[in-house]
Length: 331
Image 1 (tube, rainbow, N blue to C red):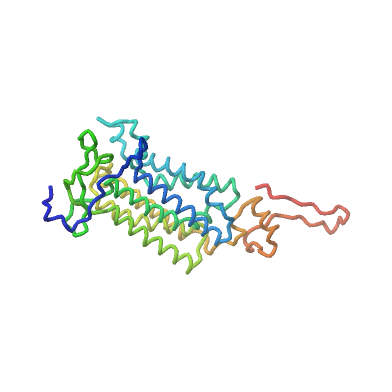
Image 2 (cartoon, rainbow, N blue to C red):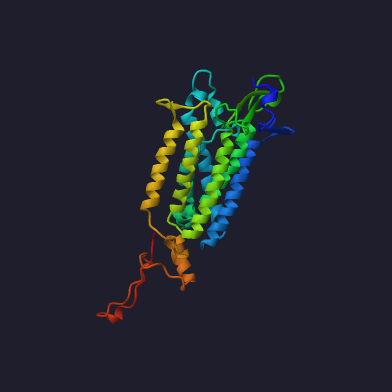
């Protein structure tokens, strides 16, 4: 235990992370995830409209992406921390208790991307272009979600004596038993640690600013801004993982998320370098029938020369009496 005189300058943790409103528990972790999702949808939709997209598209896609993302995030967390739930002394049913914390961003992005692809296909819009529009908004949502880790007293680092160290309190439930997740602080400081949740939050905000600046300055598209978001996040997460010493699965003595950060970073950078340069026109934001409809409504907004327009056959000069045949795009 750290003497009180030595911890006066440290950052205190919240006394609890759960409040009861009658029989209903209000969990800070879930609350900040919801706030982050709402912020991402609202800001992401504004960015999509500014690029020439149709208002409301991001919400329509989010109906698919958010559930897939939550499931993917939980699956990744459980898969990489298998022994906690299915090992000796574990409780398999706890794997379903997403409200207790534990979402792996890698799984959330992967399956969330699958959900977004499904939503985009149903709406006839480009998933790469949508990814560019919502990339800064997603990272801002992640930063907001980290506040929930603060209330849960999780995602912290090794013990430290730096002035901005975070106090981790002992928490007990109404029965007097130690319950770090659902209990209330006793005021006893168990340790002072690096607030790695805060490091990641600040890093995320810096990358959000960088993404917005790059997008305005260079007008990149075709999924490259989304790739830049992924690469930037991986750099910060790599450093954060090196500072953590809480329970995690290791490979060769190294936390598994360190390996994941490196692999995903390399893939994101490769995509950024190899993907098509420039930014899509409003017509390119749509695909198939949605593109045809847009071009019919906006004849003055042609596609670039390297993008094929819906084919329309012209009469054969040698057979003038056969008339004109239209060939619709059935994509």
